[in-house]
Structures are given as C-alpha cells and as structure tokens.
Image 1 (cartoon, rainbow, N blue to C red):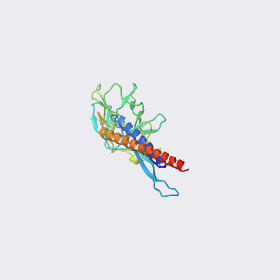
Image 2: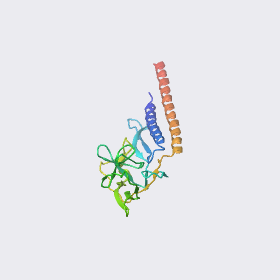
Image 3: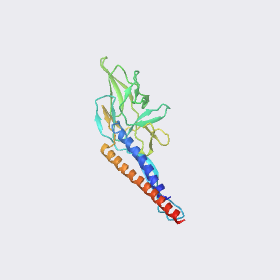
Image 4: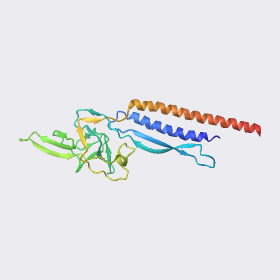
Length: 247
C-alpha cells in the first residue's frame, strides 16, 4: 500500500481537530469575555532508510488569542469589563485560584459575589460580600463602596476590593472549564494597574465572519486530503492487480 495514505491521514485528522476548535470558537461568539482558541501544527519529516520525501503532521501547541474584545455598555452595576490587559480572580471548588474576563457577576441571597457559574469572586482580603439593603458602586481600581443614606451625615463604607491580576499571557493555560490558570500552579500577584469599568461587559474576541470563512476553508482542505487517500488506495489496488497478473 502506498504510504501516501498515512501521510494524508495525519493531515486529515488534524484538519478535523482544527475544524472542531473553529466550531467551538464560533459557538462562543456571543460569550462574554471569551478568548478564541488557536491550534498550531508542524510538519515532521519521516526519517527512514530511503530519502525523506514525506512529512507527517503533528500537534505543535494549543494556544489562545488574547486580543481584546469590544466593550459593550449595559448599565448593570454588577457587569464589569476589564480595560486593556488583566483578569478577575475567582475561587474554584477545590480552593485554587482561576482567572476570567467574564465580568457578568451575580450575588447570592446573602450578598456573596459570584460568577454566573457559581464560583466566588476573590477580593484582595478574601470573599466579597455586598450589602443587600444598600446601594454600592465599583470604582475603576476594583474598590467596592457603599453610602448609607439613612444617616446624617451620610456614611461611606468600604466593602472590599476585587482581586485583579495581570500575569504574563505565556504563563496562562486554559482549563476544560474555560477558566485560565497559571501553568506552574502558583497564584498571580495583584496588579494595581488593572482597571475595570462598571456597567459594561467585554464581548468575545471571535470574529464571526473570519471564523465562518475558516470553517469553509478547512472543509475543502479535508475533502482534498480524503481524495488523496482515495487515489492512493486506488493506485495501490491497481499496482497489486498488475503484480498478480505478472506472477
């Protein structure tokens, strides 16, 4: 059998994987703060007794597109968009720290600040608990404060401050749950340079039109690779028939 089949097969498999990644990105085109996933591949020459005339396709890495998404104003106090680079720290069920830019937050009946997935948002000094009977504001540095209108003069209260970090992007890895973590398992330090805006959300950085074009291109590429496999199989069958007649 012509070994071209195996060469084309590796290309077809990785094209399918890339197609799945592209479809996943497209499905998250409306997900707040989503970062597109990038698949990278490389060609590896097949080294044998003969000349290295064939290359196999192998995974190089699975990366992330960290480009910023557009800021969309909502007017909701608990919608938080991070300006420029930076991340919001959250506490996972196992007690570890993860990072997200999905700033559409909610509170429990007790006032505990959480993500939409039910994970506690971390503050500089621990969990953030918001008052259930007083209005509050979120400043650009993540400070949360409230003013008690029932007292004279009105009393300002500092509730807490969001834990905002900005580790190097090459040190972050995306988990299967969509949250990012430090590759070495450490905790990123607080970065006072990270700023937020309340009443807004960051849109996904997936370009829908570009992603659709990429899906079509990958489908054509996969079809070409399958045709190569089919032709290689036909050539092998014809060669076998000739050898059978010659024998």
